[in-house]
Length: 231
Image 1 (cartoon, one colour):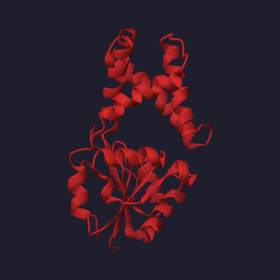
Image 2 (cartoon, one colour):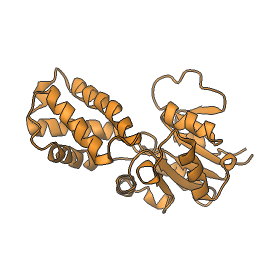
Image 3 (tube, helix red, strand yellow):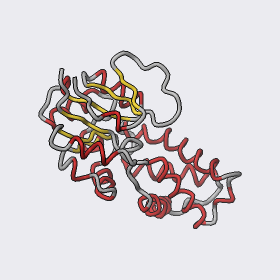
């Protein structure tokens, strides 16, 4: 069945979220005089990411709001450093300014989107909030490829890997699932979720080893490999 549309994840698929979060955090800790609380910059980043991996799913499950998970992550991080959390919201906001200033798309993102323009219907399905992802895509110069075809879990009410959000993404493109490819870096949320919803699933593994994926999942190492996701 010929693929007529492609849905993309955003963070660590189109935009190098991990690198920009690292840059923003280390600059923020240095500005706050807190970087020496850790044995190394890598240790500071590792703890921040570990807390995010624990608390962000609570937002996806509806236990916390998008802003709420930011506050809880900050409180836990500051508690580890034994720093009084007088205003964790303001602390996170100062970090976010530095992180957002470093936002950058992967070098292979714009070229593949330009190749698809006019050939494929393009859209976004993301486990985040719409204003946040829209602003991010606009900042890195990719928003115009998607127009209003951006679906985020915070507004939709279900998150990946729930089949409902993938099917809603296909409906947004005006295509049945078997005519749509989905590209993301998370095996559990993206690859398995898209495959189980009936889409053509592409698991983007930029670094490291992918292992053997389940049937119906194609591993790619770069978005450039999506040049012709049809057939």
